[in-house]
Length: 154
Image (tube, rainbow, N blue to C red; front, side, top):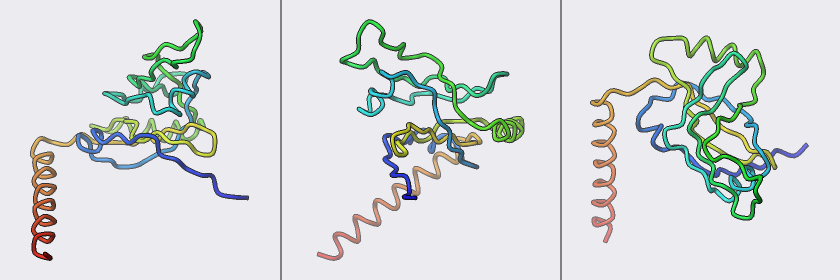
């Protein structure tokens, strides 16, 4: 059996800056036909989306999927809550981890696996302001070092 081809559509860079990622999970997402077409055209945004655990399962909130341009009157609602598709045992395990202090679920990646739309949800812990400043400082130092190396090689 051939491996499924994975095509990354969008990565949630803001989540990696604001949160420390502890663990990643792959989940399917229940979509309507026009939503799938819009996602394939990369007409969606994470914004401040997060995953909410309900009695019926897990729901992704705040994922904006633009209406399909060639859709009819039956086009989808861009801001609706969408169910995530996970095994029941996996949901229980994730729920136990989220119940720990300061943990939350954030969608970090949307990709196509074969012809299916998948979402990578990450178990995250919020970063403090000084941690964010350290990340910015490190990034600036790396950029400056690359610039100096480039000028040195000339």
